[in-house]
Length: 360
Image (cartoon, rainbow, N blue to C red):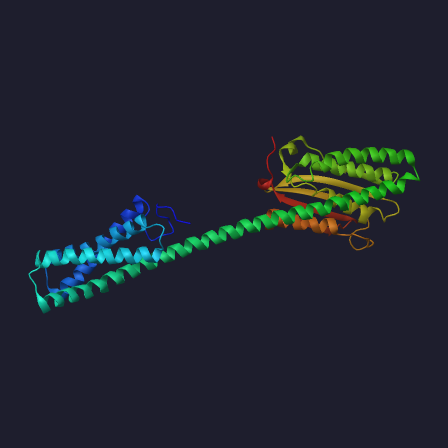
């Protein structure tokens, strides 16, 4: 398929005024240096050597760009060679006209000697300068390609991270649902009225939670409301063995965070800390803001880390929360679960306030 007739930025040609100006300026400076070298070699006037040098340099620049413009469908190597040959030819014509007039007052051996000597010098200087210019262009081109590849790799990495994040979030949903439904099932035979109330609470909670589990962000107030609904269900199931308190503050309406980060912490406290404890216990959910970090704490007075009995699925929710935090915030967020000195467990979730979207 033919390329556009307009030179691409991926070619050696100059594609805008700034590039043209840079190419002309660089060529003139190099020609001035070459004129100084040739003046020492042939003892001619410096200005005469400068005119000859500029004749080659500017001819090559113009011919190179014209070749890329007129034959944009051809390969870069073809256009570069064509531009060089045409530029050197024009430079030789200019040199001979300047030094020997027109028509040339040379014949036979003298003519060939002059032609070959000047052509050899012209080829040495022109090819050397071309190599230097082309090498700089190739370095810039390779750097540009490297940046493009890095950008593509970063985009692919972001897509992979988002896909992985959705997978982790979907793993939390059935984990939460199956545990809750198992609680309802266990209560149906023992206390049908309480089971009905629990199903009503569960329906309300699922209506809120399932509408948000596919979203990337949710309000902090809604996340806390979901945790409170879950604790209400667990309090019904345990017949009053579970006491809880979830902090509320109207100022938190402006914060948002990824969904289902708090609920797994609450579930972990109930299932692994309080359920195995005969007399039950208490769960408190607290929120504070300190040093540009939003700190969400889930504190219980259950068995604690060292006495909690192993159970199926233990740690799944916490593991997923940590992975989601790593994907979303890197090292700027953390989840720390530790043993409380007075008994029980404290799970502290910390995320940057500046990373929490402000919700109108």
